[in-house]
Image 1 (cartoon, protein in one colour):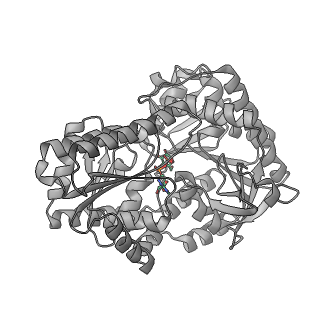
Image 2 (tube, rainbow, N blue to C red):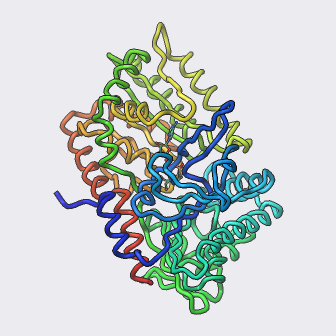
Length: 492
Ligand code: ADQ
């Protein structure tokens, strides 16, 4: 077996390469949120791809994480510089909180980030809304974050790692004030085709903001190429070198590279073999009546890009076409609500609830319900148990930067069993081409793939899962971080 990156080797590598640098991560969402529960203060780790991916990285390297303080007890848990050490019992790095008013959050986060940029980059059912007030606030909030980061840098040699589409203007603001600072940004969502991006009235400002980076990373080569073409057609004075994948504007160069994000494979694989997960599997089998059933599982943040309604329609179609599977298969749909302030997200939840109920009424009988829904943040032990107990896992995003759930499923299957149905339009499909690749828009095709997964011979399941496991084991989250650091060091 090839040697693989782990927390320890990443830590040593980062120390060797970056020991002279102050390492700063900047993201909208904080990795730890403090909130009041009665008179008590509770500290919760945030749910979502970004935190899942970066927590182990900063824990390994140490440094500062600058993020919006969104919890109602966040202000009373920081020191006079808005800082505290996290994770709570381990104190491995500093979390520095940035404060925003409700109105700023509304216009910058729920507004421009999630009703303009998110739909613009995913180009699925929901169309972007471009609102001048929301854009002005987005700019202002990027300036607030920049100020907070610059206070830390002062005259130190620093490396700033910016996360995602909430902070597209930040790299330029930092670069302008501190040209020596090395800046890299990872864009966790797709970059759309050039034509799709042209509808954004502030496209030039956004691109100029991003071109303040020394290095800009996307999940896939396709997203990188889309970005290069967008710059080429939008910024008149840009020089785009497709072969080298770099952009130069007024002498400033930005490298564009694919870095497919991943997970902590060994940790998840080990977790799946733990006594706690085994006990949880037994509990779920009993409580949900799963013992003599095939189990399908899906785990999603509640978002329209994840394709949940079409997936449920495909399940409906599957039972229509294969009535012999009634009472033999149970689909567990786990969703964690997100962005509930946005009407389209609230509507989506109602739509999913109504669809699941209709399908259960249509096909269910006796004690058997074809679809079991679980809503809310679910403990990691339960998620691990669900991934372990499942015969198949369905990831049917309409468009997704990567999708970590697909990789988490693979990591949990130390038994090399289980079938992954994976959307062709999720970044993960590029690496995990041994999954059953599906078109999430075509519900008959998806229904047929469910049948194929249930009937796949054991030897075929093992062959496919073993190959996927070796890919994710090698290309884990530590390699993702190491590859970014390596690329950046070349530029410094
Ligand atoms: P998301 O779309 O939020 O982020 P995704 O890759 O789908 O991220 O991962 C979601 C994470 O949340 C997974 O780790 C999953 O286990 C967890 N999760 C889901 N439901 C949960 C529940 N009910 N309870 C607890 N945890 C739950 C964006 C992009 C993705 C990209 C990531 C990382 O949209 O395409 O993969 O960033 O770059």
